[in-house]
Length: 178
Ligand SMILES: Nc1ncnc2c1ncn2[C@@H]1O[C@H](COP(=O)(O)OP(=O)(O)O)[C@@H](O)[C@H]1O
Ligand SMILES: [Mg+2]
Image (cartoon, rainbow, N blue to C red):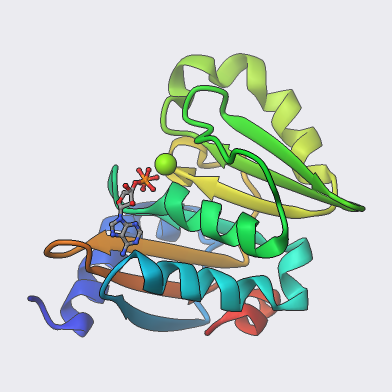
């Protein structure tokens, strides 16, 4: 397995063009985690769900197909008290949830290129509303999204293991770091 520092450099480079060109995703602090199975993904989600700062946070989820971005969101929403099915928004782009007063928007821009035109205005409304935003494939909507507080990059390793980079890009993000 690659050493964590090397993996981190590779990921930062992979994301680097966009970060440097737009200049808005300065990474303030990074934590590198290792999940040996999905249970550790769930445990991380449960710990995050207990943080008050989460309620107004925008969290980007990066990593290849099948990395566990949607799975992480499922564990997070369950831990927050969302009941019922948590669907992947791959086709719908947006799956909204309401938890009492709290609005939660789970977005997935994997297929966004096709639908982009019609959705720009709707997106502005989603991000203008207070609440929690969870965004898969933010790269595909670059320029339309606000600066995320936290970036979670999930990288698959052997079997169910994952290397996870958690990067804070704002003060709120710092308050959410594990
Ligand atoms: N450590 C782990 N963390 C998260 N998901 C895992 C882990 N190990 C195995 N999985 C499985 O990997 C798959 C991830 O799928 P999904 O969450 O849809 O990926 P993505 O949204 O990143 O494309 C799920 O079937 C999940 O059960
Ligand atoms: Mg997904």
